Length: 400
Ligand SMILES: Cc1ncc(COP(=O)(O)O)c(C=O)c1O
Image 1 (cartoon, rainbow, N blue to C red):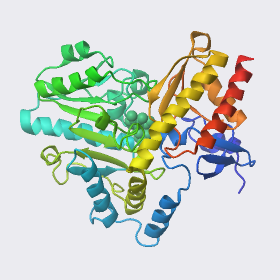
Image 2 (cartoon, rainbow, N blue to C red):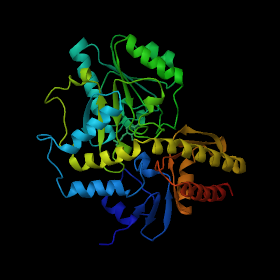
Image 3 (spheres, helix red, strand yellow):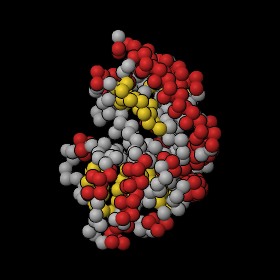
Image 4 (cartoon, rainbow, N blue to C red):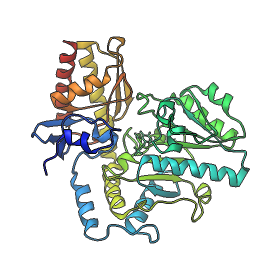
């Protein structure tokens, strides 16, 4: 059956408006569409394809597990899930792991756990969740309400309550909101969707101190920053601050859907049997792939390579900017990078995404003013240079 982009509009719910071409094949950081046109992939499936497309380690893990056992549900456990949990706990602050299927589900579990922990330990009054303006935590009704863009949670009826927002990097505003009623503070250790915004080092430390002062849990949403994206397995490991609960997804599966919530044994024990769950969470195929991704990403070579690529991207983007003067800021960490457009091009980030695709390079936006780059963590230098050359052609067309 021949399907086209026009078929999409005939058969799909219109909540997405994908690009005009349909990619059909990928290898490393290159992708080809139905017409055979080639693209350099700087989007990485929105910070997911951390090893590019069809990495042999992932293909092998999936094929091997696919020939053994696909699914059991959580009525029975499975070896890949236990092995992956062991590797995650060995590599982080966490002692316990809960597996989900997406970032939103990992965050949903984190929020439910925080509320249950607070209820058990401190009583029903301690239920306030504080999060940050422009934050993004997923699209379930709880997570989207904790997210800091009301436009995403408006229009679906009564919202989950006791959720407050303050500006990111504004410690005084957070302090003014916090009290013994605060159950948890949820934050991204670098805001992705909100515009690629880094936290001030002092801010993150201050958030941790306030959580300690008021007996509140600190939840790090590392769905986008995690699994090597900023140059360490998790971003918290470079910030000198340890969260109580951490949500991981996206790069964790390298393209296979999986999410995970990591926490300490003392906190985990509040999710007793029957309190939470998922049919697919910890699925053997997903966990086998994630284990293979872990084995590649959690190496000095790959993590140091992320920093080298960050420098290459930033220096080349700065060179482009010297020629065209279209960016007022080039920022981000590791391979979660953003280029904020000048006033003249404000609101036009999507035009750059579209022009890039025409020239054979896939980029992302983070809000209306920021072009975002979240490529494979092992993208070859030649692909970075070729992709940025294509992106420069797209810029030249827009600037005229
Ligand atoms: C920081 C963060 N949290 C949560 C999510 C939601 O993840 P998912 O789309 O897998 O539910 C995203 C997705 O962009 C994200 O960037």
